[in-house]
Image 1 (cartoon, rainbow, N blue to C red):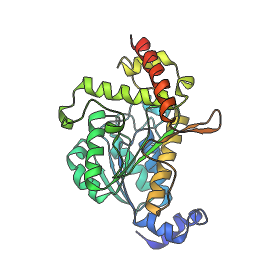
Image 2: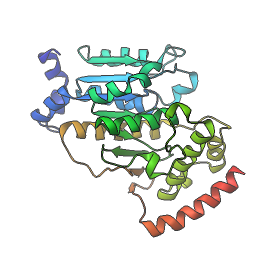
Image 3: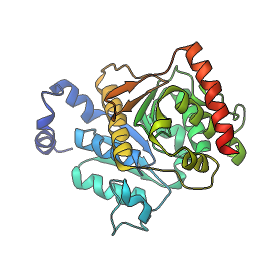
Length: 290
């Protein structure tokens, strides 16, 4: 990386970060699995902040429906591979970036990636691949930054010693090799996540519940909205940068939600309250899914 170019590119960071922290960012390494909505917004911010080594992976191509929120989606990138387009955009920001670009083969290289990139951002919406990503990250000592499927921006930080979402949310995938996870198991795991979101946040007040139920049942695509997606990507980038710089944040493996309408942070409820509310949420979900 050219020292003069890098110093000029990041000069306005100083004051928010120290020179020593900027050096850590320059030497830092992040793997971003999925560069669509949240992942794309996140990785752009990581590169602009000066992270020196990035790996990205995505197996999809841009669609017209991505134009509503994905930062590298434009009319001239529709039908082009997301990883390829994103790589071009990132190198326009920092031509000296050490960038690795992967497509569908990324899941075969997870062990190598998790050892080379101690910070992983999960922007992947495939349940089975996400389960495997978390399992491998634990074995290799990598931290994973993630967000919930929620109408409120959210962020999660799972350190190597933390319980995996698979364990914490009681997915029905325990003991199943990730390639053998069935569509029913994946759907049930997604519903477990939705149940947690509705229990521990005010998400029900910010989305059409019937549309959400149709999405959970696989009757429609996931709903996304630019302010929510890009804000979540920014929260994820902030956690990744803090990890690299050695700053401690209050984000943990349970995460939190940002309620922008009411200007407040929503954190997980205490046990007894969560149990009671979770019972009500499960009844509501059963009615909606019926």
